[in-house]
Image (cartoon, rainbow, N blue to C red; front, side, top):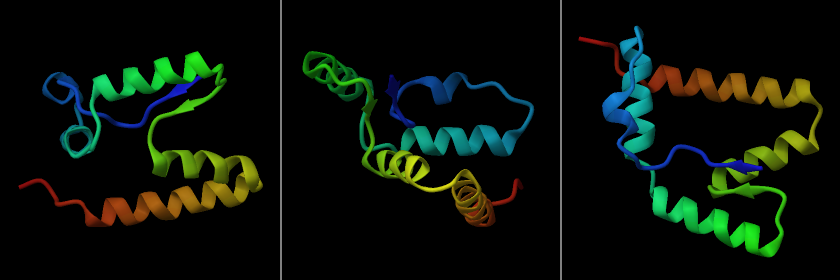
Length: 95
């Protein structure tokens, strides 16, 4: 299983959605990523070479995956709702 989070690509330029806030958020997440497609590919190749069943390419998201596996789903879901609420509160409204 390869599970990359957002990484730098040209996807932000071609994303199409009726929700302008979602398009802006997606572009922001893609563009602020510290790694690009080449780094993702290198991590995948290294994981396959080592025989890894899970290739999680971002440290923060790896911690979230481990948290999800370690706690009951209700606790995980509540934590994700809180995080999403914080993220949505920070966003700038459309002008």
